[in-house]
Amino acid sequence: MILLLKRNTEQQQIEHLMEWLKGLGLETHLVKGKFQTILGLIGDTTAVDIDLLNGLDIVEDVKRIQEPYKNANRKFHPDDTVVEIGDIKIGGGNFQVIAGPCSVESEEQLTGIAKSVKASGAGMLRGGAFKPRTSPYAFQGLRGEGLELLEKAKAATGLPIVTEIMDASHLPMFENVDVIQVGARNMQNFELLKRLGKVDKPILLKRGLSSTIQELLMSAEYILAGGNSNVILCERGIRTFETYTRNTLDISAVPVLKELTHLPVIIDPSHASGMARLVKPLSLAAVAAGADGLIIEVHNDPAHALCDGPQSLTPEAFDELMTQIRTLLPLIQAQK
Ligand code: PEP
Ligand code: MN
Image (cartoon, rainbow, N blue to C red; front, top):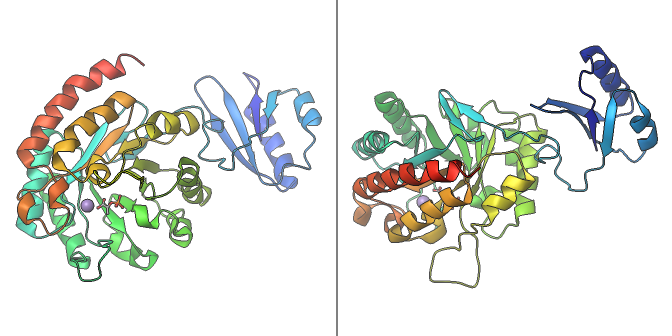
């Protein structure tokens, strides 16, 4: 349930109301937006008398929220959430590109790629240290050593680092990671999500291979409900009957999510398509659809990459793509 409060309501009156509602066993979330102050109520609101609330001096309107996600709901928080990672902002009109290899392979590989994607305009560096592989015999990532190499690449370039966590017990090793990624396969690892709700770092939450938009939002809700409000959503392609591409990019997820939630939404065209030559058109489509950013796999030698070479851009192709994004982005932003 949300209460729209009247303009010029005094803070003390709001606090009294919040105290009273807490006494009814409800959790309250106050959001002071540009145009409206909203008090969100979470918990069992069935016992609350709507007419009574509507009759209060400071209340302009009362609305029940039907959707099961509350904290992630745009009705709760009409303004876009802007996630800040140092000087880097994402969401609310701030577009960011995260780029780097699928997996961290060596210091030369990672630092070399980091320097080149930075020169091309990427705002953050990606690289998997713990890799979720379908086969137990495939390269599983450099694990702890991979995290150390990410830190070195960050020290060499200043780029914040984004990497995937697969198990909450690894969290102490993620101390110096800037954005923790939850991969598609772990989108519904609810114990992991609950733990990440208590972490003071932004979370990049990828959509599960066969998850609906509502399921993605419910997973984000786990993190938000735990107290971590910095969640970035990522559409990375879903399973459909089509087998030509690795997955099917659900481009409509961008405008739909932008409508339903205030959280930033980015696209991963690399895992969505599985093919380097499709990364450019899908990236430009993501920009046109209103995404807040992209996460793109880049490798200095895709043919010899230990993971996901076929979908990795060379640094040169990435540089060309960034030029095209810089041309398209202002045209799209001017339409808003
Ligand atoms: C990745 O980003 O390296 C990855 C494994 O992605 P996803 O979880 O989307 O498959
Ligand atoms: Mn990959």
